[in-house]
Image (tube, rainbow, N blue to C red; front, side, top):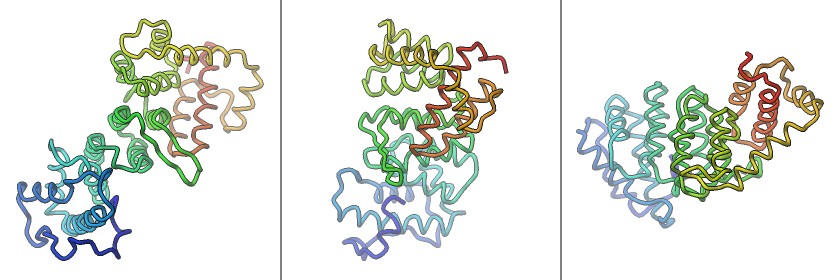
Length: 311
């Protein structure tokens, strides 16, 4: 719960008059849906402190009821999360509730679809990233949740334990690289041909630079050459291409040093380097971003040496 247990000692104005779901009876879909609308029908980003306190108490009770009687409420919760037109914040908090109750693969997939429909202006950026990241590490396709970020140019994830703040670009990249390329590469290549938002374009160009496939490099070249119908950030694309050129000029000793630091064998294949990078992006931290760049350097050097595809 976003406003949940930390408010246990607070007494909101609605505390004495909450209309709670009947715990002894299984409500019908219409009743449950109305309760969802009553509890979640607000906008966290613009709510007053008192409204957040009041809503937090309501959500606490809602969570307690659903978790206490999952056999009655879990089917209804799934139905609401899969439905259209629910309050945007419910899609996030309801998905978190579903994950707290069930670890079934289908429920994890439903939660991923639901959080990609929430209003991110009212959700803590780091929590959103960690929620999607955890599910991606289970082998699920979290690309929809990642692409959802592109609609929020000012998205930020504050990571206090690492004294860092990630903006849209690296929040997007970090989440995508944690997945198998089959989940996002074709979608990103299609999206960059239609995307016109400046921050979203930057995120897509950077992602494709890290992907380092023939198709990805061609898309970046198209942006740099001004022939891309969608993204027009030619300067960034030119910078990315120049960065590749500089990597090719680095002495071989630089690669050997990184293999040792990362505890990777010199004989590791291009494909296995990508798998190692994917696995190491299982956390949000400055160390993860450093390893992202280090392994990407090795991936590109491996490809430049003609070793890509020789696995």
